[in-house]
Image 1 (tube, rainbow over the protein chains, first blue to last red):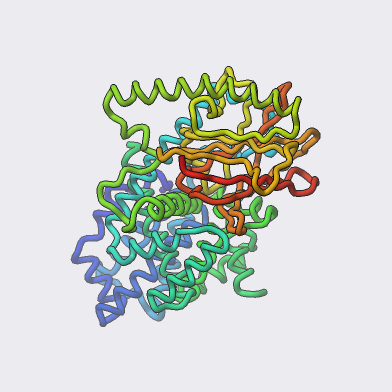
Image 2: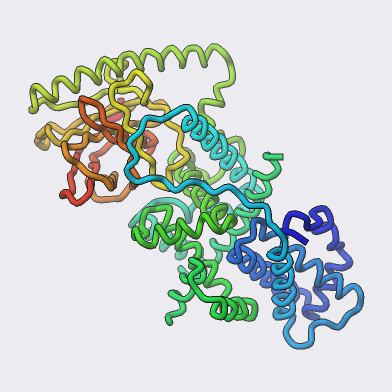
Length: 210
Length: 292
């Protein structure tokens, strides 16, 4: 199955509330701990597929989770020792399937030339206009994605990205002090939130393209 | 190998398959390690966008960006966050306002015909005045080096954005953080190394209250060689912006690098632009900003 031919409609609809509950129960008897473990798995899958070079890591992460959930629903004993290793194994299979079939290639942006002497030509102006349109769309999507975050997380993200250079560092130190957390925790928290926002933007921009 | 360096190599795609598998197994088993990978990735993106990444690392990272679509998406997200947060900080007391019009949609937000027509007229006037002013300024630079070049935000003092009729077109690729900014020039200032200015003769930029972009034009001295790097700082040394990868167009009258800066980033005060061209010594161009 190629990345493109992965059943898009099935990927997200497969995970019914019942199968999701069963999956959580299989991960841990305590619901809170099961939810934490699920979040870890989802993040790990995202990182795995991102750095393997997947065009849509979210889709492949969902596909992996769906496959495992399906086996759990079928009553198979799958988690002998470490459930996370099992997810990793399934993820590798999913990625092998992607690699085994031709994948639609994405056009690459041209790296900027360092000393190109030229006047802007019509094509270049067109590209600039397109770039500008995408940037505007991205900002609109970002605004809508930020609105979906809890207000504290939203404030944190906006404050975290203020300032540059020395001012940025000072700002982040103040921010950590204000929230009563260490810089490391602040860094981890914002990188998770940025990942969530990137996913939201990815979907929002994808929806606008269609 | 230090943990951080190992993670950087993983993000950059420079590990062999066996080591990559080891890292993957580790972050599937250890949530702390997974968090560290995400955080290091965030640090690299920040450094890339704010110009804090050394050139060699920057090249490595850009190669990786071309290969990893979702990493590119994360960079774009961070870029948008930086822009949005900076705008939010200067425009509003609260971090997020529900009905906010994004800065880049400024022109698009002028929906009705008559305001557009009026703005169009103003901009046409500025273009004509700008061409005239530009030619006058260039002549005065070549004939009287001691003249202080200054541009004020009046129709005759504004240098237009590059147009086919403009004698000098300086296309300058902005730094990653500002790549998507939209130029709508409300004031412009020429900064020239040939002009000697004393403390009380600083080039003065008068900025109107309108939203938009200020164009700083830095004159390249004869024989200046790429690569170019331009940094905008306050007189107190606070870094505001860095531009790299200049595409300079030369005309018989000389060459200029145009830097577009959102007007809201330049409150009243003193600033300087530092230009590094090839191996030549760093040149500094001081100027002051005053509200009009």
